[in-house]
Length: 615
Image (cartoon, rainbow, N blue to C red; front, side, top):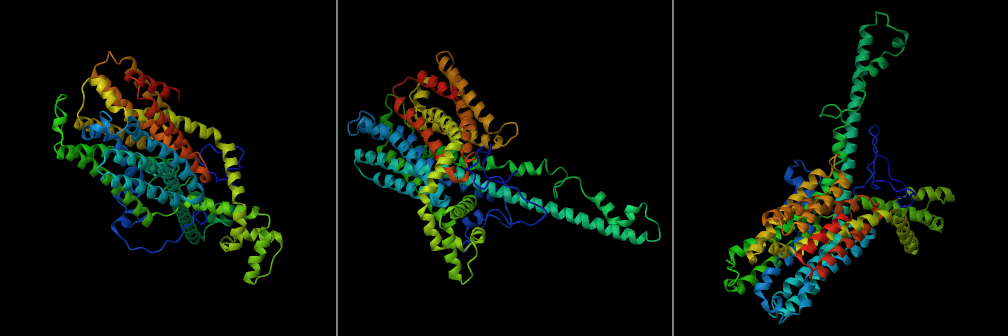
């Protein structure tokens, strides 16, 4: 691995992988690339112990909580509430027929807007918060997303207590947009933060292993030298075998004792082929482990609805007399309990981030180096630095020495004078950054955006028109309980796809590109089969094909469209370009939500085949 260039955006040929590549030397103790900024001491709690980075006893549960559960808590809470709204549509049809049945109190446009106002918010948040996080930092962006989601979710929960149905769903459509802004920022931030944290851990593991290998080498050399010295004393009466051995007997023994290749301490031979591969190839699994929390949130939203319907006895009846079997008060309690539970998860996310979230070390290191480069490029930096030297009472050096000192000086970075110089040129630096980023990475941005757009047409189309598909396949009108059960099954299959993706993403025979290509291909073929054989295949075969589409969609394009933008763009624009890619994905979701309402089931299946085959 080669170190990253000094200006990662200004390179003429962008690297094939992410810009954050590191190397370490085991022969000397070099300082770590990422500075660990001191944090104020906190009293340890159960949560802090679970999130402790270097615990005395690291269990599997602690590691999963630290690397996957807590970083993905925002995705879990946000998608739990978002997909609960989707799953609750069938319940609202029974509880509020005036709005969702014959549209007496609520207009048809208002009911439909509930499905896509959140998508508009997602698009705004992905671009807006993703761009802010590129310049303000990951912690700032993560707190902002959690706060906005909490505000939107809390307003939805509070307005749900209003007795007027039209007011409830009008305010819900508005605050779903606000909530979507926060959730939209969660996508680029969770991906970038997980990727950068995995990079830091990989680097530190490699440094630690290299140091252990160096210590083992030194120990072997010392032992060889001791043996050579003792052998020289024993053979002092005899002649050396050759003149070279007589001059330097320790060198010969050292050459024999020195290992031909580095070995792993405590893990046998072939360190370079085994241990190093594991260290460098675990990033994808870490990032997709965070993304799996989205699948858990979607599954739990359907499962909680199913359990509550059973607990309250709202199982429905026959198709003719189904409405009389529901209790309106029980249905209202059920959906409000789910909404308030989602708000509780959001508040937990905000509180935990405020208490325990630290700034990304990769972003902090990159921002510091960019700051120093900007200082050197400022026209009157020499005069400003001379002023700083004069304040300290030291002699002002010549301009060349002042420029070299400014790169090594930490005090200059904190001076008010230099801060003013930086602010004067901040707009030019941002414009230059965006220009260089677009010039070097526009083709990657186009590829990630187009793939995400095509996939979300099928992904959100599946979610929004799930009941429509199943009704056309089985020719039976599901009750609210039946629809919740089906949603739980399909969400469980999706969750299995999330988990499978984490296991194969880093395999040398698979990787990102193959996983995406094969995922699109398999899903496209299955949609083709469902579309053209819709009237010929039995219902069970169609349902199996539909479930396979769901599985390979998650273990394929859904995983790769999330992880790839977090790895192929430089740190300075990582969240911004990830957000732009995700925004184009939500354009596909918007197409599915608005334009597909009037199409037949066969047309939808064939369109899903077309968009997946375009890849």
